[in-house]
Image (cartoon, rainbow, N blue to C red; front, side, top):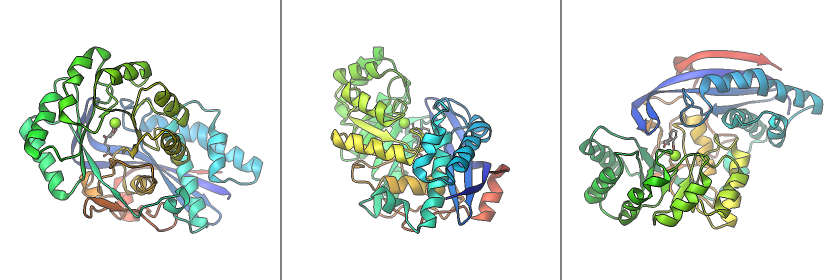
Length: 372
Ligand code: OSB
Ligand code: MG
């Protein structure tokens, strides 16, 4: 496959409601889109960075610069040297650049989408998906008050979401969890996500979540604190799940071997793309470690690929794969709709979704084409 041109686009889409986590509040989703043109087709990849480097070190404007100034020229050289490209050639071509996994993932996904479309293969078929729909969970932000949180959770449960994830931080942890359990009962699948907001000194506090029978606690400690998570896992009953700390199949294997996690959140952007995401799925499956598909408030484009990934057999827990209307009044693609608590896995070629030109134009801030 021969890429001829690549588009880098920056979009800004208002969220239906502010989303507050321990690292900040978002009102608008500012992300990037990569479009690869080849002689025969076109492919899209979503750049899932946030506006500021507060979830990971990457951020949208920085990632767009890395793509423009480093990754795309490297990919162009590799394609010229080899007389073409396939999805497996992207990560090796970009390997000289350290980190920048979300930027690499966006480019690899665009190449993969174009490559799959040329072959009339869906992402789900190519990944080895074993389901045609996936269970949907929802990530619920930190609220100003407990009654406000109970309203939000009640609304999501009424819509049919099969699992609730509460964002927590010091001062917003035991009380909201207790309130949700008391109001909605013990049968609700419930988990929490701290986005690195605690330290090992908080172990006694976090142990007080034990009686609430949570599915897991996600990333309580700093990204680099694998040993801390292993120690915490010995001091609390709630299973520890890692998000920020897992950046590759190797780091997943290490974290599992060290006892730092019993569950893994797989986000393709965070780990450099869908090829590496599938390797993490495989490593975890070999260790009988359950995985679930995380989210980065994706548009329908990134969501389509995530839903295909979440249909692999090792994804045994509901993911942060919510319907489009949980995030956006108007998505840039055909929206994902909740049906009986599930989202349908796209079966059309490639990602199975493409941006709708008028909707895309309405949220586009900048666009540039790079000729290869
Ligand atoms: O930690 O899982 C996270 C959103 C942005 C950045 C990090 C996270 C999240 C979410 C929402 O929890 C996931 C989603 O619904 O897309
Ligand atoms: Mg998380």
